[in-house]
Length: 207
Length: 207
DNA sequence: TCGGGATTTGACCCGATGGTCGAAAACGCG
DNA sequence: CGCGTTTTCGACCATCGGGTCAAATCCCGA
Image 1 (cartoon, protein in one colour):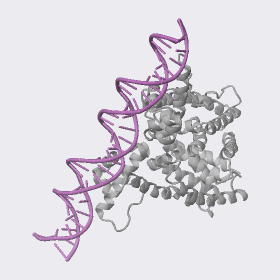
Image 2 (cartoon, chains in turn brown, yellow, green, purple):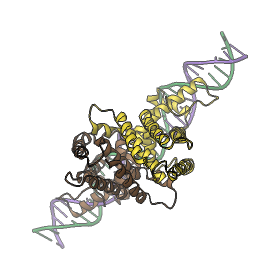
Image 3 (cartoon, helix red, strand yellow):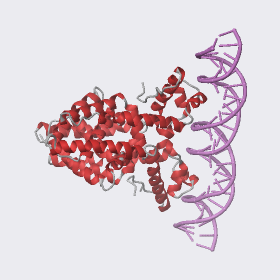
Image 4 (cartoon, chains in turn blue, brown, cyan, orange):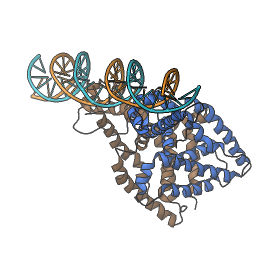
């Protein structure tokens, strides 16, 4: 159920099941309460294990959190990685937007875990931000810039274009309560967002 | 320094100064650590008071947090409130965008405090969301819809248009570390954002 | 200057929480 | 089935952290 891949080799069936359960429970609790707000008892209960038993699988609260984040960034960036320099520019970007929004819809817990980490100043993944993340974004930004130079899309600062995709899609997961509170009953936030963002980015990208 | 207005009448100079200091310190700590992550000792130290002394001014940790949030929503919505139905549509909206981004730049702590609250599911301000906030947004959404009907701006779902302004501007405060990590040295995120968002919304709003 | 209220604080309380330990129970394989 | 290994957990521990209290100190108007 979780995104994080815990299917490491050399682990018994029980180990896989329990690690899985723990990470899934932890994802729910950490994303909803933040790192300090989450308690081992809560996580253990959600995972259906006793606290000592849980600590048999992960050395500490920190270790659980770390394992979660480790798997997260990679999966989170998959949609961007899939942006194909050889594809049709507007179609590629629109596909990215829709995929990213779909991630928000399917994995709001992951999105919120990430948001929590950012709000705290990213103490545990700063290295990944300035390393892998920056590298990937720079690479794709170059692609966007090429497309712009060739007149396929509007000439926009590529990094900020990417930020805008992140901001607009993650907003629907991270601020879900606000979105629903403001829209009121009888709305499907994600369906509406999908249509709205489609319009927005098509207009924005038009040269 | 804080946005929150603590200058209630009937308070001595010392009271005003200390309440002010406590709220300012608390804003910093709560926004950076979340509610549970913040400790009274931290806040007290930042405020330059002893913990018991601080609790002489506010009955509890909860009370401090509450006082902070109470002042926040109001100030936070001022820019939207200022959107004038009688003004020139595009200019009004663009002014709102710029004002909102300026809020992110000047008051990132407030933005993050708010974001933290949202991520936790807004347990302490849900009433305000479905009450005052929804009312204000509905009112302004109606204005936007009128403008669209009259052909002054593109026909877009007004609520989502407002969400997009929130998402794009708050992103620069809430995800500040990420933005700076990805952009690298030699960038002024807010200056670039100001220009980018100007372009984005002008293209979006064009009928 | 003096008295009384406002302010400050050191010492303390206690429930919550992350983490440990040793022993019991369950597993699985030869 | 027998036995070493893995898994489970009740009881416990130490620290943290929110909050209390009584006593001291400060401040200010009469």
